[in-house]
Length: 149
Figure 1: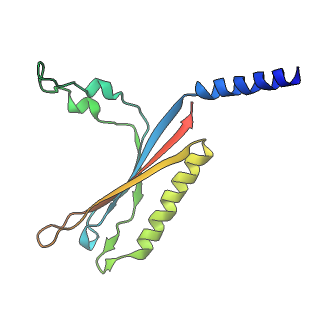
Figure 2: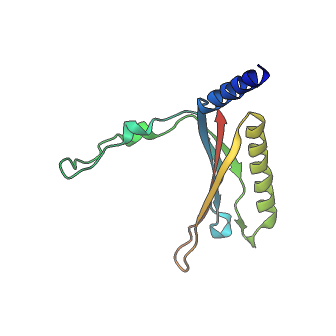
Figure 3: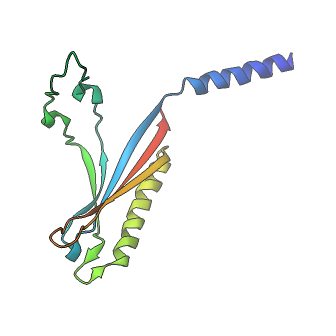
């Protein structure tokens, strides 16, 4: 009888886990690597949801009409924007700014973890200054969190 109850409990827990719904949230840091400290650096987190299906069309040989979604409807008006410091200042790379950004980003991550989110993935990319005449550059990192609904 005890074995039967134990099997029932394990099966029940497994069933609950299988039906658990997971939600994801993306937080993006954009850190300027523009010389002279002229860029803008931010930590961005959307507070509203969008359904990608509203802005998606399927292309095929039979139907290749262009996607006529209104870009204005894609824009998010409700988001958190946290200031970060630029990697460069007038004197060059500023390591104190990098440490300050790390502290702010860590605070955001710790807050989200305390709210039940789990850091699932981190991905980053760089578009850097390509030489004379190109004073643009960003370092972007996406922090992807998940939690059970």
